[in-house]
Amino acid sequence: MSNNKVSMRSDLARVRGLGPAHDGVGHWWAQRLTALALVPLTLWFVASVVGLAGADHATVAEWIARPLPAVLLVLLIVATFHHAQLGVQVVIEDYVHVEGLKVGLILAVKGLSVLLAVMALFAVLRIFSWGS
Amino acid sequence: MPVAPEAPSTPSAPAARPRPLSPHLQVYRPQLTSILSITHRATGVALAAGTLLLVWWLVATATGPEQFATVQAVLGSWLGKLVLFGWTVSLFFHLANGIRHLFWDAGLGFELKTTYASGWAVVAATILLTVLAWAWGLA
Image (cartoon, rainbow over all chains, first blue to last red):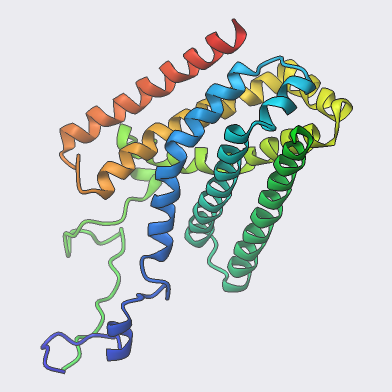
């Protein structure tokens, strides 16, 4: 090594640039990207739901069956569960120090997020199909 | 020559080597910045749990009027309204403080004065948006 500072990292690890978490800035970047997408999406969603307060089933279903709300709901669901899952993973990594339990909890959170996201997406598509 | 790893400093001997120590919550004076920081995490976890409400609402609507009426009745009860109120407070706080975080990620707003100003702005925005949403929703 030409450098006077002795590094614990191998040359290969340095070149890969993935750091100790082995995924580089991928996690960090995905969390910021989904955060940015969620700023307008959540404001739209809260405003819409407040407008629908007390509405009956037909009104709500009719609203979801419209193309724009349906598309925005799909985007909201994908961004929300991706963002939530990434955030809860960091919380688990910070507080759970037993390796097996940590990995198990992260896998459970990721699996549950996929399940809930697909359930929500399926619901939106089903309601959308009534409108056509 | 490899540098030997330094022995971790303990709180009992800070005078020997005066270095900044990781804050121990028991002796750390709460301040706006630290309170908002942990609140961001707490509201994030609460909102992750709150996604169950979103899924329940969508699935019930997709199932039929009867299931939808059940969700409406539960969310319309005082306990349901309390949960929804907590959800809106958490959402607006996490949203406002999240935007504050995005500015930091861009390298902006790290001055101590700016950090406090943006922190109070987050508190004000949370209160304002929550009041607006409920005033509009209950009107």
